[in-house]
Length: 461
Picture 1 (tube, rainbow, N blue to C red):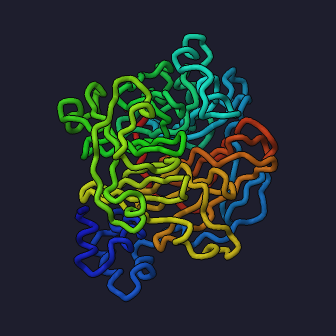
Picture 2: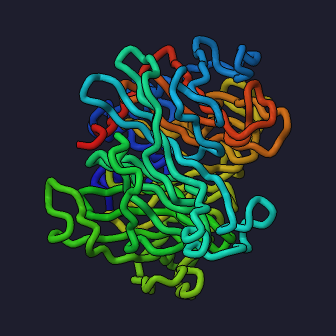
Picture 3: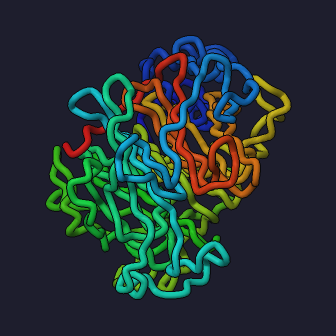
């Protein structure tokens, strides 16, 4: 069991209350302070005193601003990139279409990068007509030079000025999500039946990237990294019968204080004892089984004992816990990597009607990618739903951070990420143009009236 969780339970608090407080004890306040604050009969309320989320005090969403975005009072927005247009005036580089998963990096000069994937579909996925029926294999489309995905970066100066934009990965396809690694690279995958994972330099020095075959071939989504545990977790989202994966490495391949060489990492899939229903009522014991990884798509060699989580999306590692979302049932799960258990910490059924700031807000739904602060505040964006980025609060209610316009329908909110100083939040409307009109994607920067605590890696370190 995670030691923070064990201490909370010894002090008379339920494990579910602790997990729903999303590790404030591991962030800006000490465990002792958290437990002391939870000494009253209502820990979920009293914890707000020493470790209260700044998001808990944001008000309801206001009328749309000049960019068509609804924000709480005190928040402002600007457009930083539009698909098919040059983000930096005078540059020949144009922003990619279908912006999806994203992350941020610090720069040595005080600036930062925002990296975004291009979930552009092609014949590897059957296009938008039926993405589950590939027209051609990935190898065939690659040989024809028709792969249309990749990833790009926006470079900001220390004062927030957008100064450059460029490609960091090309000749890939349907790049959905990924992660900024602690060692300063970007890892992302292809969300197709026979997709690969790639690692590339966010500074753009080698846009060919490096293919990581040891991550298997399937519809890759987001990635989370446990350095101390020498494990990399990643989600699958393709046909509804999706699995949750990890790669584990030896000390030889991943030395202490270093980074993995990616030459020897065992691919494993999650097994929940008692199945998903046991996890809903968790904690349920888990185990990991080695899976076949011989170059064939995992869908051809699924082990029947592995547990299905329909539509796996976002995943994040924090203080010994792995949090991930499954869009098929709108759940958010927490894995205790030390205690080897899993349980649901959010479902629409568990959410009170409305929102603390607006009783008319619909429940969080269409849970997709997510990101977290160092204090455990979770931002979840919606695919479908109500085109919002939502904050999951310590008392497991949610408040809206923003609502993006979608005048034509069919878009989604993608690419949640904070700038290294914690004052700016980035996201995209994947299939929108300006002010919600039909388009191929638009990326926004939201400036907040306060800063949150985040730790972002140095690019190319």
